[in-house]
Image 1 (cartoon, rainbow, N blue to C red):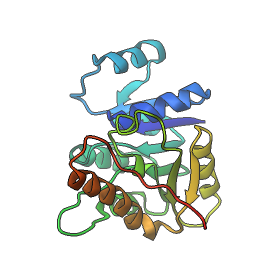
Image 2 (image 1 turned 180 degrees about the vertical axis):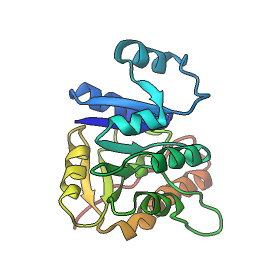
Image 3 (image 1 turned 30 degrees about the horizontal axis):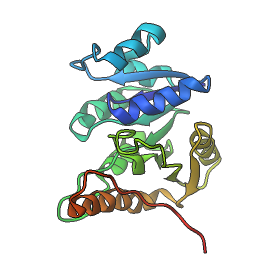
Image 4 (image 1 turned 45 degrees about the vertical axis):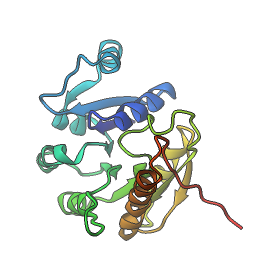
Length: 205
């Protein structure tokens, strides 16, 4: 199994390292102007030869995690449109822009591009800045959603194999609710006027 992680973000790098550490083959897809000389990325590329264009990473991979900044998503979408996505598992780890109301445009666009292929949502509660937003390593869970088909079990295992607790949030229509968690914690942090970050933890009572 090979995982393609699309995007040159902190989240992409962090998830990639976790998968590499458990022995899973990983390739990173980055845009043409991405600075591959950044220290940590340079090390990854030197020892693992892992950085390549979006299309190459998608074509090589069985599972594709979208961890790109919103401004770079048009390029990611174009690469996906040109690729054979048959039998590939697509996981959206992004959060759409939040202005006056919630949108779920990233996941919806991926569904449109992937057509018959399933799209899942996961890891978005971590944010693209992760792990800088969790320097003490206290976040141990992530939510995921997607239609109840056999591939959903693979998403759960994908989360658990790198040490997170996987919390099933239902069908893919609930992707907007998962994004709401992310935007709410950001708003709380802003209004607290503190440098620390806010995160939610699920408690059953």
